[in-house]
Length: 409
Image 1 (cartoon, helix red, strand yellow):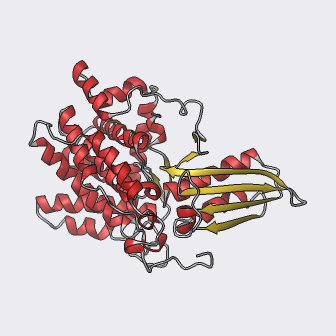
Image 2 (image 1 turned 30 degrees about the vertical axis):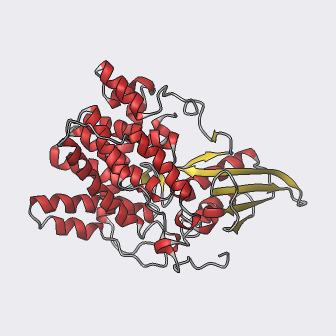
């Protein structure tokens, strides 16, 4: 299991798998074949099906076109066997001969795979640094040694993990604040109005209990809208679900005056749970549906909240389990292929559910029947059982009959 630096990635939206991953692949291919006279990039499956709405072609062209003419080709009906988000990059000489060809997969959270292993990692981050890769093992170790989840993270990461998490937290807070300040219409054919600013203002007029929930909505909307507009955010665990965890942490810092040290420890715990899912299942909407994005984000946020409120290792695990369990089967069906409807509202609802999961677990001693690891396994199987229509192709569910208008589709 890799470093949390590979889970919490800082970059621009709207999609970790459709924007950040392809951009990184283009950068790597350019470094590999800088002398090409022409580039051709072929997008397959889900990457092609919703690529227009996710600005996939824009991200690729920004990297390659300044160096040589580049063509992006779309094959949304062709799925390569390893992963639905596949792309082939080809470099040609001035006389038209093929210099190099590389097939790579954007597997979620901005990560890339060549079909055998993760690629594009630094020497530091490509190592598996966690000896235990299930929450059951880690929880048992914590309880036997009187440690917490964040201490397990600290033991296995390099010392600069706290610097990274501090930067992550700074970007998350900036995304909330920027989202609250920005108004107007989000890019794309839906002409969707930003809502975060109005939710924030309206929430201030309610009594304390309703105000709290309204502010959480506002913060989640703020980050998700920034993501949809291509703003700077943190994958937590993906771009499409980036509003959930910041909303919870920002709200609790504002209302409970938690120190930055405690917030960073909560980020470490949340990241550990997200990392376990990434290792043992998937955080890719194209592979397992939105349960792997918003569901995992809710789970991470529930774990973070439980830790901040003094939850035991068992209570934290229970909160995280509920956050994921009650998103099982959630489809990924972005209208027009955009990370807007239903994605943005789902972030707000998931943030509220994370707080509910923490509250529910706090009434218990943490004992429950179905473990977090069991839910992760079920989520993986459920995702594989879902028809491809409901996994980010933009053709089923809410997205049906709302195709993004383009000649390629």
